Image (tube, rainbow over all chains, first blue to last red; front, top):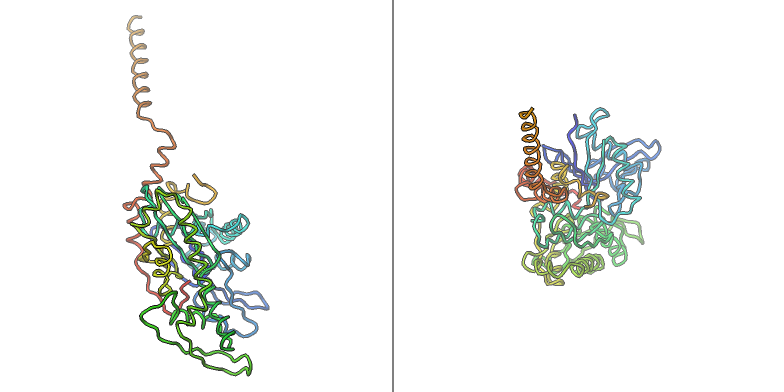
Length: 334
Length: 65
């Protein structure tokens, strides 16, 4: 008998929670294929290490963009391989709860559930990421008080107000930490005339990226290919340059937080001032982001204890209490 | 004959009393399922999952999403 699973199928990482066991898999959502034969060569961490470093016959891809499936067939194969790695076979078909962005379309929803069913799930239910994040962040969402959660993922940023076990207000934008990396890549190309890969851009973000001024303003050396000569070249980037490069993305995320605050009923708004908003997701780890959101919204911002795992923990809780919480799944709204 | 009538009457009375007492404590199905939903989201219900999931060791080279 298969143990039921909760899956956080993120643009950046995929996490799997197994009922009764906890998190059993945490890997980048990447798959490497042989371009000629279509054969899967690697998934997860191994495939991620290949990004931008493959010979012509190998392609390492992220089959999800903006939290949605961009390549149905590849996503299905990736899910199938992930499920196999956690012990799912054709004889053991578990129930699966999958976390998805709240803004996905009906077609995208069906693509996710179909991919999971074809990959070996007996039943696939979907739950909105901010709801799962609020459960996983251990917020008191069972009480009649305003809980606000900001989930900044690889491809989407979602802000939700939750009270009495349901979503009261919600705002989502298809902008996330991959857009921050892309902004850094574009800036370096435009201003310094060198091309860098997405992994290098991410390293720059992690090393010196920030949303507002911080105490540590160290610079970083970046190596790429000179667009004029085609030769390798090194340039030095400052945190101020990176802040300028990513400002549009950060402003767009903060604007969606403000819109969500504006949508919340006034009775709940006073709770935010006392309790604050909770930041989850890998994008929330960007230095100075919490302080900048706090400064622009005048509402305290707190970081969740386990920002990267909160979503899958929330979905894991739903799989543990499947019958009592099945009203929370998308399409079964109470 | 009289005993049969008394027995039937007593049975009817008992059935009515039992039905009335059950009916008094019965809750609307919506109330029951909402209570179950809220209870399943309480901190006590969530404790098991929170205790099970400890912070995972992370490789600094991995994408943070």
